[in-house]
Length: 405
Image 1 (cartoon, rainbow, N blue to C red):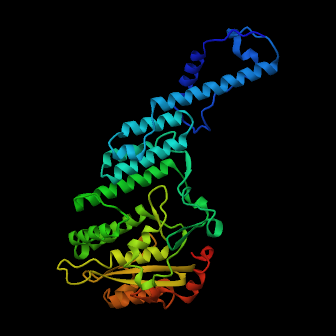
Image 2: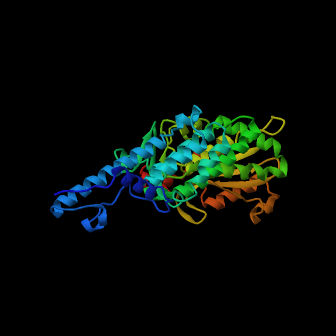
């Protein structure tokens, strides 16, 4: 059997040209299809021998071309890591080049992760324009519709329950990994929102802010409060809702460290939070209890402009039937003593209750707000300390992570 082969380099160049065309759909990997029959080569070959010999030869060509393409991609777009970004070795154009090269070679997943990781590093350094370029690229083809899972690095099947992860003394249950199914495009939207808020925070504080360092966060919200006194206080709670939505997510359940008493958890929440997993969008995983502890820690510590008293009175409330919805759940009541405005923080939503008919019965007093909270959670478990919110039936539910809502 004798073959007259075309130039191998010309075959590689042709394959690379095809792969460098704009990609609109995620590809499985860098592949080059081997011809099924000798006729597919046309006049390029003087073929002889058996079909089996031909197919073996064609398969070898397919493998070698694929390897050459992958090597070429790596040479033209060397790996860009978060460390490269921190050291100034790569700019957003380099990151985008690498992501596009990976996508062209069929690895859209790692292309999207390259954009996420580099953008996060820019954002942490306070380089928001550079971060935005990376995150905006995630909203373009082929990344925009490419599927991913934001909790893929969080699940630990070897730990309790097969779908929980233990960090420190907290246990976090990801109830149904599909809850975190998303696309790189949607992740990009979350990251852009985070970028905008962090930039706003830096303008107020004069330095980059770590959104999960609650000492930084409390200092920020104190300044926001000082800038929005009295009836302008809705700007504080609006900003707090934006903060919760951008940087936290409810995973399904969390059993907080039993060694820390419930009433001590708000003051120690910064440390408790360090033991919580973070999803790929940069959101810490907390449950309804976590939101409650965080609200008391952040908003409960805000002072009036003269520094003599707390602006907000924070209540905690819970029951097995909250606002008509069954299941163990806790919420926070936020009462602005300077303006008589009232709010309820229910997970990452903040509802302004100031105009509720019941609130008008006593001129929006704190006393009537406490009564309104009883109506909201439909239980007697309301007070100014976290332990006051725990209906014994909720406590029973929390013993099994799979039953906590």
